[in-house]
Amino acid sequence: MSPLEALRGILALGGPVVAVLLVMSVLAFAVALYKFWQFAASGVGRHKVLSEALDAWDKGDQRTARARLTASRSYLAPLVHSAMDAPDAPGLDARLDAEAGLALAGLERGFRLLDTVAQLAPLLGLFGTVLGMIKAFQSLQSAGSSVDPSLLAGGIWVALLTTAVGLAVAMPTSMVLAWLESRTARERVFADKALRTILVPGHAVAVPAEAEQRAVAPTHA
Image 1 (cartoon, rainbow, N blue to C red):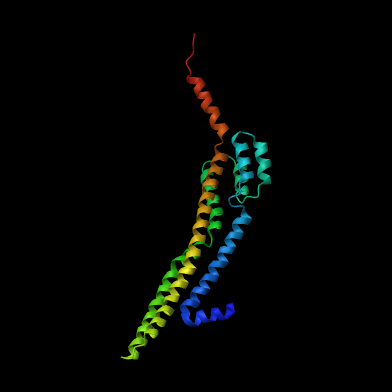
Image 2 (image 1 turned 30 degrees about the vertical axis):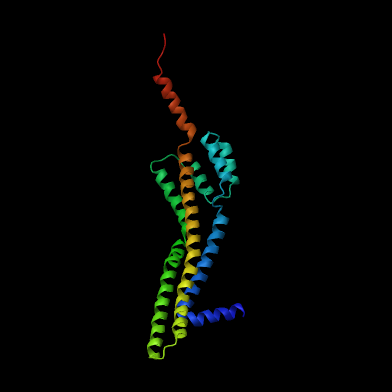
């Protein structure tokens, strides 16, 4: 039996509920492939060069930091470059946080659809099972006293088919969504650290602290 014939057989047994679930699975698969491509193209999780630029900036070597930043292919590189060039003004940190949130929102686009598929697919499968059980018991009632056990068994396994399809669609979708969300959460933490490093570098914090320690140190006659 060819895959196309097997698919037609499943659609004939499961009815419109299985057809809807298959459409949802194709849609979720397409979105997942797009998100994988987007994350790879944006350099999500690959911040080695950007981290080197941040370390140089943190130590006060702005020339090296800008040179390393130019070589970075991370989607956060333009935002970090803007932070380096931005004049010190009130509300700058809030403005940069908003721009970082906008960049991360682009990574999260499509998550709502995957979440909807993961939650709705099992419910649709259960709905199809309930409809199938109703149909099976109606057939059993119509048979009257001459009940054929195979009639009931066949109706039950056909009814359970929709639940199996719903779970088969929901489980991988949920796993993919969890993985994407975990990667995005790490990106959010890294973006926040990057902006804090640019706005308040370590060498700028260390100098006032050392000056304060020298000022309060006791003098010996």
